[in-house]
Amino acid sequence: MNANNNLNHNYISKIILSTDLYKNLFPTINLLNSSVLVSLSGALRIYIASLLLLGTMNILNCLAGGLIVYAVYTLDRALEPAEDAINRSELKGANKKLALFVCLITFIVGCYILNSSGLLLIALMPLVAGYLYSKGLNIGRIKLKLKGGLGVKNLVVGITWGTFIASIAGVGLESILPVLLVFFYYGSKLFINSTIYDFKDVKGDLMAGIKTLPVSLGEKNTRRLLLTLHIGSHLLLISAIIMHLLAFEPVVVIYSLIIGLIYIFRLTKNRENETPLGKIERLFLVDGEAASIIYLRAAVATLI
Image 1 (cartoon, rainbow, N blue to C red):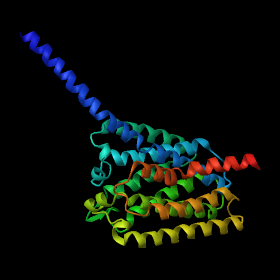
Image 2: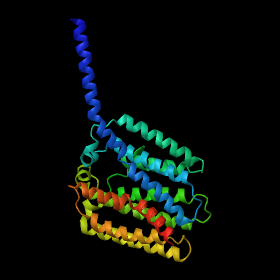
Image 3: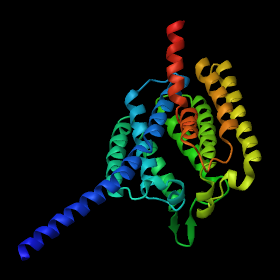
């Protein structure tokens, strides 16, 4: 009887284990896949920035940049901040240990590649900025934490990734001015993109006490701010090209200007109950922008 009981117990344990594994499988896959598109976009943005700067094209550095983006964004989602429990319920139950292991591997590989170009500090910067934003740093009585202030999240995203992209693309350049121009262009673009994503996370951000721009300023005022920043950054980009500070890349400038206007008007509305079609539209317009630019640029080049 004892032998039969043990067999039954082992059999039931295996069923429960396999059921839990199956139950956690899809959330884990969702978690691991959640940052793939944004990491690909990050790699392509570094490539486009290199085109604008007429710098030495280093595909490995572009790949490494994409790996760092993947590691940082997946790590943030794996640590599950308060707002993500509401904003990304599809990740609930994911295997966080596996996600953390994948983040560690991709981050190490990215750092190793960038270190060969003397960019290790740049590789570490997004991780440090992310930690200061979400966790903060205590130095005696002074507590440095970036999370919570009006628009701080968007500023952190814009400054961090704008610096990251411009520094990798501009490595080896003697003049700092073109690199600063690319930093402002991508810093503005990523500030805008992160704000647009806030329109679908209003409820979670409110629960977490994060004062995003849509929450604090409302849809209309936020849209005006984003349009001003978008048009201003592109006017500066066009001026820099006219002054021969940046490369003549008409497809990059024109497509970026037009698509930005489209998604600012289309996506700066309450998207709490975003439909699957709406999600595809957002992913194509925002995260797919860099890939669209590369494809169009290649298509135009074949016709000329």
